[in-house]
Length: 282
Image (cartoon, rainbow, N blue to C red; front, side):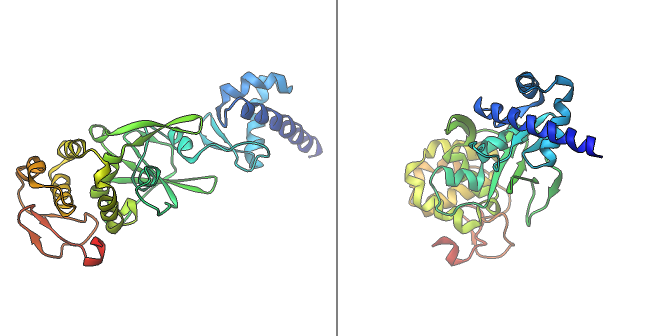
């Protein structure tokens, strides 16, 4: 028992030195290969790297993100922890920070999201699926370093309107302002509700590229296009700029709030059922 304890202590002590050196190289997120490259300088033989990483994980110094990939814990002394957005890029590929997280990043809300929202069309390194009210998309959740990540799975053809932005010294992929607002018309539940989406449109519509936003909506589906036309008109955009949205053929009424119940007056011009309360448009 003592021999095993001493062995663990030895590997943990040397492992901590290995983690510190990885951090100095800017690798807050690292692979086993990264660890093996630096292990020898810490007097850890290559064959014992996996064991050292196991003990470090057990003691909370590192977090295993997925097979062969690790994150240095935010509690590790003397390091700058990896940004939440950077971590998200490793949990799913491809991945883009989106929805409420992107809205806050672009300065279109003062409400700080308590979770990190990520859009992906690929595989997700998460333990379980979740279901949210009115959810017609596949959503997954993972918790890393006490931060909750919500992954929204979409079809490959719906992944567009994204750009690379600098977060500190790292580049991360984030939906652009126009796509972010459009996503609010698809899934307001990922923005804190319809009222938050409407408020973002109301305050920032003059700062976005309308033509780009309209093209995004037309590339998605009729319901999104009609919702966009309705909300742009409410924000004073003249009809001549909305003709592509207005002339789009549609059969039957679509609800304005996709997460709301089917109630409220019908807007024949936009073929939209206004299933929202007055306070949600103020």
